[in-house]
Image (cartoon, rainbow, N blue to C red; front, side, top):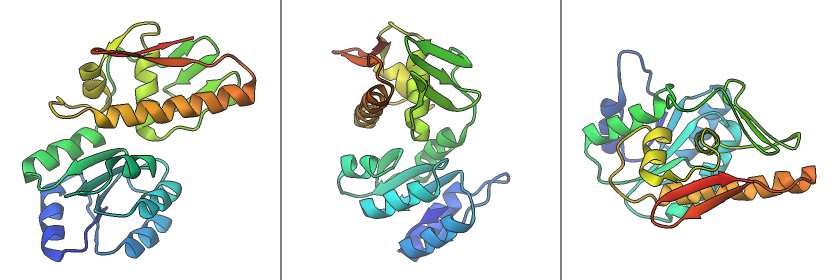
Length: 217
């Protein structure tokens, strides 16, 4: 689903994303998007400059969808915190936009990611798409789950930022990795909350300066 108020921009976005194996719904307003989201599950929702409240409501009604914000300006942190999985800055070439969306929609995973990863009291089950910490379920957004699963595939190993971006976002990333930092921050918070409920030692994501991140007990 593409949400864009400008009809000309909406047509351009729709034409860039349409494919033989893909249906694209173009809606002009946030209200129309929320109505559509309440009726039908979507693989991906592209939002043209929505407010954080719209992101939050779409995330609640579409927990399995990838939410991508496309905007010429605005608060990246607020959008990601409200539920967006990625933030793209307009203007963006149609070919680049299509490539990024294709990367989000791919279902393949990194070959090094096992079906089940364990770090101390933490278990990440990729097949069941479930994360448990001391028996307590850790509720994660789609990209948060993918990122934690990738780190759990190599516990105790410092994984490079570029590797995480390529494996989780499934593209060669040459720009800012701010999206990665925000997602790591949210995962840390959810792990702390789950550890408190389960009364177990927390599992940490340690920042390795100038390199990446390491998952450890």
